[in-house]
Length: 577
Image 1 (tube, helix red, strand yellow):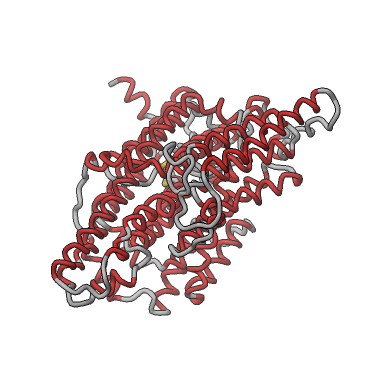
Image 2 (image 1 turned 45 degrees about the vertical axis):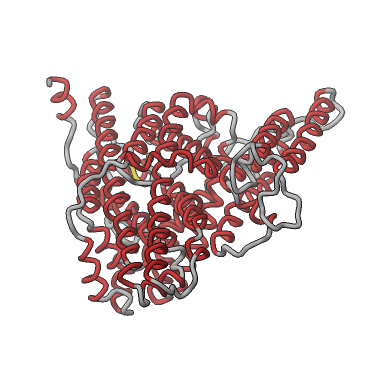
């Protein structure tokens, strides 16, 4: 008890905590509102024409309840689960801040910001949850329009089962990410030493370009009155650094402008607000234990799950080091492990979205925030998630108002990736973003039969990480490392982890792309990578004998040239998501 009191004497709410809270809450709010919209999108099969025809057709009473299931998944499971993990993470990081304050006898410690892992969340929506829905293929199994009550009941059961399965697979995958993140936390700094920071960020940069970039800009230009002005406010406030909002955080200004423009342009109406009130109720918390029966269904998505866990661990590592440079030295491994535990807590309570240390601790410190803003954030966020107030926020805030915030996150990842590499490595960045663009293209249409495009889209994040790392080491002329990563790519290809719809050893010599005239069996991809790997080994021998050029001079980013040796050793970036 005495120990608790000794820590609590450093707990106070300062004026800067108000600014810190508003910035953190509205940054997270922008992500949450878009996640709600895109969950509705993918869980309805991208607003399937056939599904909505039947919902409004002769068998509406039978089919329409699938929308109730979708709303239950979003507002009764995913959002409250996210709320409880926010409570865990914010309280734990408040404790870490108090402990550091007591240790160093300081009152100016700023707690690590904590929030939704934005790139991972959107990767889960489009690369895990959406494919599960389409794999069930309910529309293809039934005629349109439905011709009998029996067909309507079976059609409903198919869609309802698809939604439940997509949620369960997403939650199971999120639990796996949390578990992997904990183990990575134990030795994550060692893992990052063998993987260039630039390629870790490049694997996420593709998500930043496709799902946080292109997808958000389509929302901006879908309604130019609401979207364009907030977009350019983001450019002025974030990328140009113009502080014309005074003490009011830029994210709040952008959202408020969007709300005002939405109301003026009838995008936000009293009818939509009234409809959203139906979702305001006390949802409570639900244990998602039944979802973990879907562990076996996560296999095809291992190429998304593992690199997301790796990138999340690396992002936490980089942000903790960023906090250290700002004057707050938090235990690195403890933060990495607690992020993994927080994600596991969220999965246990039904959310498919992970959380992690958030971007920009130095900015919160400049606000004058201490540890109090973290506590305020968790209380408000939990209250909104548990009582369904995010439904009202989703109706009140137009997509064009939140799109610029996510665009900023996506472009920031790209910017940081480029800052981590010399100009000679720009081709590495370009090859690294292509898998996510292919994934986005494949998501837009289920009729795409281009085998090469689909091979590029499958396990896009892992493929981007592996491919960009191989390119990195080749361009740096570090041929042994390049050969090792290429042998790794061959192994992944042999088991269908990359390039294939399903990760399995049973289809080593089978064509997984039905009806294709092309040759894309697993062994062919493996053979292609092995040829490259063996040639790199030969070049490595020639390099060791001095017959060809040696490695390039090691590149050190500008911001690291004055950093301490231990910081340079792990090659962190200034901030990550």
